[in-house]
Length: 170
Image (tube, rainbow, N blue to C red; front, side):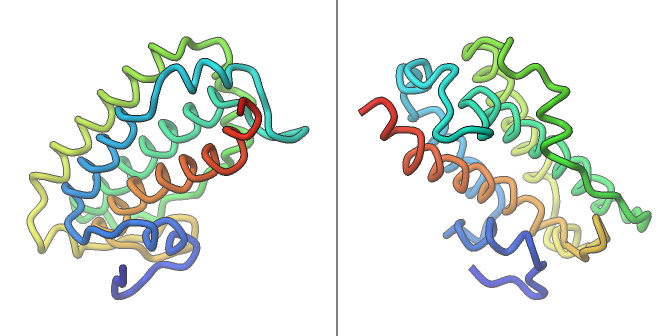
């Protein structure tokens, strides 16, 4: 996937997405989320693949939090707001989220509802709006790139789950 301009830092997520249409990318990644077996998540409950790494619930909480932030940024830029938006510290968010206290059912439902809301949001952005940009955390990024980042960020973390977490239970 190539975007012009391709935003630094976010490129690692965007390049994981094959689709150029944001809505299709978000729908496919929602499908991938729904197809990931809940029993696998439950088997990983409370486990970390290494000391200091997040549990699976913390990973899911992080994906949801990040998507909310990306959608907020996309909405601001879509509405032509040129205010620079600061970054966020995912570790600080994790420390203050109590993700471990949530049930998988609540995390699943929150992800699905949030994603469906974002699909509707992006479905209503035309090409001109998708090309609008703004600056977040010192990086210029388009509305389209933020949407693709949401799909790619989820895929990135699901790849980490497959590569590092699943061997714990196999």
